[in-house]
Length: 200
Image 1 (cartoon, rainbow, N blue to C red):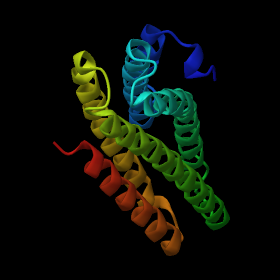
Image 2 (cartoon, rainbow, N blue to C red; image 1 turned 180 degrees about the horizontal axis):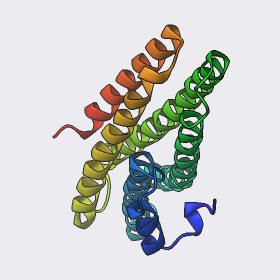
Image 3 (cartoon, rainbow, N blue to C red; image 1 turned 45 degrees about the vertical axis):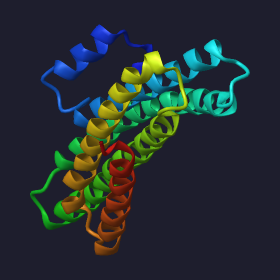
């Protein structure tokens, strides 16, 4: 699969619209999160360009660098999400006529579902970091770009909650109760962090 980093916007949307299981909501959440990161990076960069020696220049510089890194991470996570869901679909389609086949299929589905839950959890955590950075820049960046930060926060909230939905959708297919509980707990914690940063 060609990385989404190599796709045009139109190509990504066409692949999302295609009648195939992946890419789906998880990849869309990651790309939306990357959009939020890009907006925060833009605001930090504009602010730094306007006042390179300002009181908040160090914050703006570190934020721009962090958002560039997270933006790339989220695009990679969109790739990972599509691959993880493809692996789950492959496991789902394994033979299940004989008892041994059902056991093999069940183990494969559980392993694939765990990966398909871990990837959107990573996406959620990255997006929560974007939201936190956007909130920190509020009132410490270019006033004329304040609306862009607001848009970034809205994108981050929607994308992060969407990633959380994808974690939860895969949990029932994971055999190990402790793994399910851990992933659920970690997701709830990340959502709480996201909501603290994006609340009005």
